[in-house]
Length: 479
Ligand code: GLU
Image 1 (tube, rainbow, N blue to C red):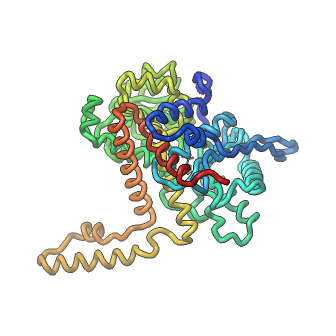
Image 2: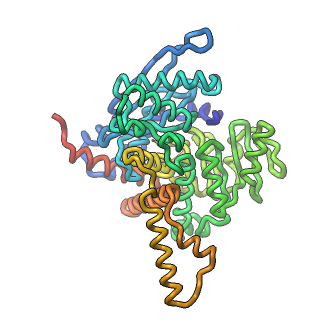
Image 3: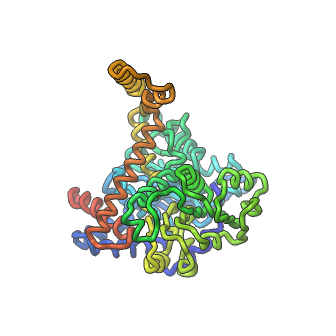
């Protein structure tokens, strides 16, 4: 929910964001077998809806500009977040919608890509005004059939969260009385409104699972001059919003050392490690990340990302690493927590330096993966684990009892609790996410090996194009 200054650097790219995505697509398309027409169809944005609507703010009427782009209909519903930011424009929403298509394909989420945005700074409005804007936007989507559990399912993105999703679900449900699956029209909702446990932290957790898996491959770590395993790796995270904060938290829990944190007002660095929660508390009480005891201050947050570390996680907005600063980045592993944080030029500079870039459309796909689980929960109208948790616990108890009887030994109370535990919703969501991130990592790695590529983004695009291309081929052309 935190607005950062990073978007200002977006102009530094020589390509528009959408053109950058197309350029990366074209690089990968060469390695696929699809005819030109299919590739053109995969690349194109299928439907673009630009809206202007009036909202009464105080005693004035404001005309609000908003978008929803459905990039691909090869699988339905379409899926992708809604962002609130002054940087929202049609090109950005198109690029982000396209990335959603590839992202869903990579993590085997059976959806087409979409994205929405409203060109506002949410900080300029009261919650009441934001609710009015959000509900009006949702009703405009309903009017044009641009939202629905089988049509297009928004989710949170930059500047939005569970609160906005709840307003959208309620607006949709009141305009579609009796639609039994109405809650499946949007994901990222609060738990009490049909949300799923684990969705809030899902993107950050997915970032952690993806980077950890890469670090576990000894051969790849050796090529980078690093030791295998996540333990002790020095990490800098840029952006302490939902993605950055949770990624940093899981890295620290996994044994990595958070050495740098950057936000829009500046950043802090300590080679011996920073206590994430203490930094967050300091920022809350002083209003700034700067001045954290024991850390070096950087008035410009961008300077922090250039400091010594093994892993850099840009987790704010697009184009923050570009032709101007890429050469100064020291990290060997760059994990894209945000969507499009590297320009195509930055990509080339860093690859030439021998770094590995774990691309956004894989690494931050944890959010949409768990959104898929939430959608499944909404359609099945039952919490994950409700039917089998107790059954598993009873089974586990009898296995323990049998083993104790056979061996004549007793397990300790702690062991008993661990062995007996049947899955809660959050356990199942985490395990589904972990399995997805690990499985997709090796799909991309296999593509790298097959095509002898150093560039993981191109490999990820190859994986995505192959899946979407096959879907379009099999669907045929209508009529
Ligand atoms: N906004 C998130 C993304 O960019 C999540 C999208 C979703 O859950 O549909 O991946």
